[in-house]
Image (cartoon, rainbow, N blue to C red; front, side):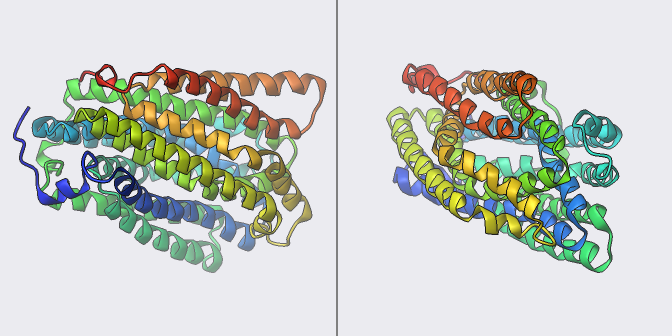
Length: 458
């Protein structure tokens, strides 16, 4: 354990002292605004492509989300593990290991970026064939994926560098950088797609330029910092004991993200069989749904850092109080917004289609009518998974998601397809598996001791 000296800025951000509610909210609000811009960032491509190119192009962009996140989600999960470790060392005031974990995280990001670029660019046609992508949208889907994955460096490095800042309790600077990149993305989308007529390739190019900009801004901030988590470029290297720790706590999260996305890719392949209108309508709805879950993801990210830092500092009762407060917030917020989406789904989905195509709107509205009233259950699952990751128990949510959100979903779809070919199954499968996973995590958490037994060794 190294020096206990920390700077004023770090003491201001750290979550082991002060009002629990104020600390969590102060951390979560910038995350909320940032996630809002991130979702706008993602939705802008669809809105501009749908209105300036057409519904087939919209279908190509909309179907991209699940496959992209299946690959990106794995590496983002690793960044979650890295953030948990950095946060725990910061909470314990172990300056030496904070420095080592930060520089190893950056080195891993560079390696991951190269791997994801190769996988995405080379295997895009294979992935799209697996998803039963219709012939009429196949060429545009290939273009969008390949351009997007060519910019993997910005995407991965941004998430890893933001993870370092958030581990130290800084959610404000990442927000500022995300706002800047979101504005740039929107302007470039309009330039490349609406003015220059570059189609889906232009939308993807706008996204990767904006992502790279946000990553560069984060890197500059960390290089110029005087905190213990600053980056010194000459020290960026892989230290194998830190790599093992990062993988120990990040690999389950990465696999969990990919497992969830794999099941969504399977569901997307069923949706694709109903044609471009279903792809466009449901894809548009999913973009809107992403806004609803912003409070959930924001509080989940906040609670992971809160739990990690407080367990690192031995503040066990404080940890429990923070968990109770966060849980109430996410469940109420998710259901309130779910009811609003239930009411306003039709006009919201219509924003994405060029000619107010009634079939596109119908499919998006149909899904909203079935899943929105169960959002509080999904919120509970996400929140408890975040708590367990912060408590050093990432394997539990991984196995729960593997069984409930992947195996059960795929099994339900394949079995019902034998008897009836209906798109309703792709909707119903969500609340069913949300309920099962929530019950499972509730039972586990009731038997978990948030005390020294939850403090994992590193």
